[in-house]
Length: 279
Image 1 (cartoon, rainbow, N blue to C red):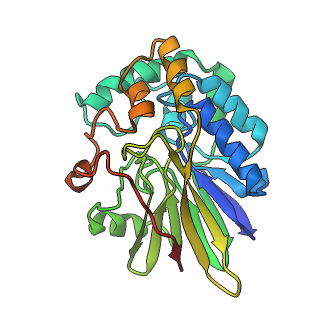
Image 2 (image 1 turned 60 degrees about the vertical axis):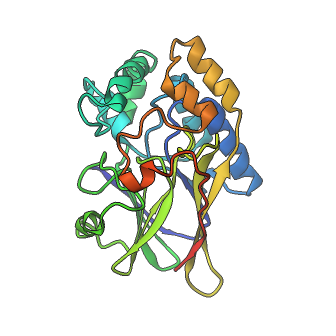
């Protein structure tokens, strides 16, 4: 997996995942970053530029024109390799796996060859130093880029991943629900995604801000992103993607909980709240 080293950064940084071909959410995030006074150099996307939604090529074009740092998720890797599926890590025969056949084929057919080749050049890991902390941004896990790690995943899974890096702060994506967790004195954060809701009954996407504190330390805070979900869902239906994911943009609830641990399945539709972390 290719790693890009950005050196020492001053921050603040905005990190997000999963545009998922949702152009309306991606445009809203750019407006939000500009409202916050952030330059493109202060914005990082940790992968899955395209997936469920209706405008994969326009979304990639918009992101590239914006000039933010873009990383390779499992979707980019699969498209670049011409793989037969999205490589999302869904269980064979599950609802998520069956639904992915439609949207992955759509992404393959609605991105051009040069874009898919470019996806293959993207880094899967991003290193930098912020406020004296060694930081690493990834997509899923270090062991594999499609590993699902949630807030209540067994600690052993995080311990296994942390053995593969010396970073003090890891920021991942992929799973679709933001969280922050401390394991053995190190911090594992998930940025959340902007292109699909967090299964909490709200249409909002999520992004993460990392802000150096005066003196020393870092603050991690998660923020909702409101956008025109009605238009995004309409675009999906117009493209023949009238499926559970189009409905999820409106309902805020995923079409399947296959990938979720039991503790998170019972929280479906309950509004998510996240407190800031300081370290």
